[in-house]
Image (cartoon, rainbow over all chains, first blue to last red; front, side, top):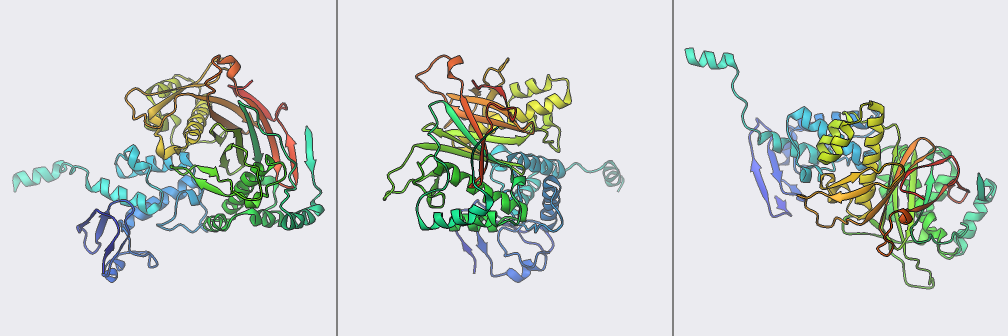
Length: 148
Length: 310
């Protein structure tokens, strides 16, 4: 049973087994098809709400861990808030810049200021990456197409 | 160094139980700040033992929701600093209430953008001083600034704080064009880093003074211009920015604490005094271990004025 508390939800399904769900701000979605999505997720205790690609979440965690110099024993979860991990505004700003460099995206001011958790950051990254124009084909691919 | 007040540690237990049985605060009363005067109280977390009973006593001062917030933080260091931050706020504010307000009883609310404010309660206590305050912390210093009536913002940063990216990269991304030009023109990296930290803390202090915080007032919308020769920095709103809610009548001051931290303070300008020179902010600074020790450090080498202060 899906319950939605925001006015805007869109579903995009484009990866093998992972359903990518994007939603407006302040939206929590609980899905009855929990089991399908959980098989693709590496965090078994994660409640399914606004799921981003696991590899994006992992990369964001790496960036955060490096920026904040977190020890291995610090519990880092997708729902971890940057402020609860000890990040001040200068840290958050650098985390955003690192994400931009890592994923080749630009985060607009008004978006960057709304990223407060690992999960929110990962969702925004996935959205921006998906919205990027397609990369031109490499030269060898173009040649093989021409001679085929 | 002037020691104002010291309780021996073995008296702390009885001081606390007295606090529990009466509404009197054991903190020595402090006179209210004058107009244009900022009072700054700070804690160095290293001066308080991690597992001491002191921390437990401080925890007793916190409200249930503050205790929950502390528990949600990752790791002992963050939790300790959060306890100290709340303790500093509560004990500092109660100092200005003539011994009649218990630090643990003060209630707070949040402004529109989340800035904490005092919410004086009606009741037996008729003390309701119009105090404005703001808190800032780094892992090594927690500071609370207090002023009378005028909204105030403070930001503290370690002087030698390094950014992972270059300071110019961060500046290009978040500062205004003129601020980037100012920084780019500095030929020495360590001075450039120092000026960047000063600009950053000034901008933070401003957005905190106006109650909007970093997310409510993008840094690209206003420029801070550093003054020369100890003159106060000035600020103007960028022409093509969304200037809703940005006050343009603010006053700044910058100082160095313990040769280790940069502290920026921002307060709205007093409209009735027009001359900038006479309108400089005055400052009093105390190092404190709440309920244990207070030390007035302004006027000593602990506090080094950079600009904007008389």
